[in-house]
Structure formats: structure tokens, C-alpha cells
Image (cartoon, rainbow, N blue to C red; front, side):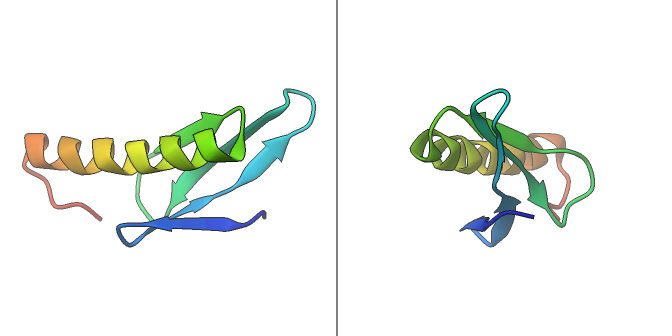
Length: 67
């Protein structure tokens, strides 16, 4: 596995696809799939934070406890 990012207590994987020339990852430790990608490390970090914020907003909207 690659490195990890952390935001608001959530951790996300950092992977790279040489064939697609893209960074990608998924949030670890939760049920379901929350993924993100970016064409640079900075865009990957930004999209990771956005994915966490979207996940937390969805939990509020659905009335469920975030994992």
C-alpha cells in the first residue's frame, strides 16, 4: 500500500496508476466506498478532503452516524 492521508480523523490511501498517470485512493475503515482521484498530489489531497466533507454531509442528510 502507498502512503496515508488524514483529515478530520479519517484516513485515506494514496495510490498511483502509471498506466493512467493518475493518483487515486479510498477512505479506510468505513463500510461502503468513498473514493477520490487527482492528476497531481495537491488535487488528490483536495479531492480527499472534499470526499470526507461530502461523506459527513451525507450522513447528516440521511440521519446516520458517521463511522
